Structures are given as C-alpha cells and as structure tokens.
Image 1 (cartoon, rainbow, N blue to C red):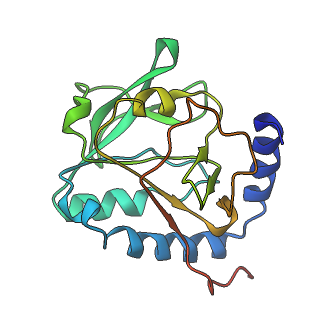
Image 2: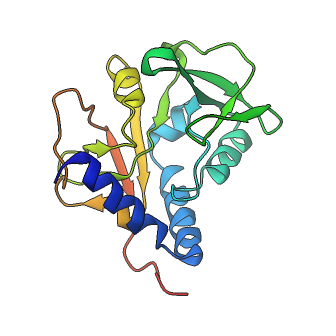
Length: 188
C-alpha cells in the first residue's frame, strides 16, 4: 500500500478508537515507559504535544517533570527542519499551520543533550521498528544523526507485525517500540 493511502486509512482507524480505550492504553503505555533504563537514565526527554488521535503526552510530560527531567518539544523550521525547545507547564504555545502546538519562545537544545526522543507516528512495525509518520519527513531528517534513544509508544491499533507501507532507505528505524499490552478492553 502506498504511504499516502496507508496514512488516510490509519487516520480513519485511529479516529474510531473510543475515549475509554485511549485512556486505558495510555495509562498502560505510561507504566511501561517509566520502567526501561532509557527513561530512568534520561535527563532530557523530547516529546510532542499530542493531537487527539495520538498517545496522550500530557501524562508523560507530567511524569518527566515529577522525576526531575527536562522536557523539550519540537518547533518546526523552514526546509522541513525542526529544533527542540525547553518546555514547562507554563511555556507559551502557538498552533501551527499543521494544527499542532509548538513553543513560541526559548533557546533550541543541542541534539547531543537530548537523551531520549519519543517519536510520534501513525503506525509501527513490530519486526523492524519501522514507523510511518504524518508525511512531512521532519523526524526522519532530525533523527538521521541523533545518537540518543529513539522510542515510541503505540496503541495496539498502531502496531503491525510487518510494515503495511513501503519502508524507504531514508526512513529511520526506532530503537524501542512499546505497545499497549493485550487484554486492554476496547469497549465502552
């Protein structure tokens, strides 16, 4: 399946998830996230401000702050580039043309100072840890020379045994993929 067609199909699938399922799966993923050494050892964690179809990142940021970690969030730049800026609960944000919230102030954090990036996306393959994002290529460009840990959190609806989309040479594979465990009720 072409990437564009897969994205459209996956967006529709994720929009059909119930709020109850999202809440339970997000709690399960947060519990999994805080266990690995990558989280335990990280001082600076990069995360996005989630959209309604993504794993809710607010509890993740709260857990990071409670653990004394620095949180940085992306700001899109020209030429499909991005930088990560410090983020606190009171940081000013603005909605971009993509509909996502980004920081409006702050000094970009050097990539080498970020220990862990929680990489967003629409789908992930369990076999290769390939991901398909929203189509801008921002993360693949940023991660090309990133030396920290690339981790993602996936609802069960986002995880596939193998990629159902073409995986290109420039697609950056993830280090760790955490999927909401089976047995999570998906009914209201």
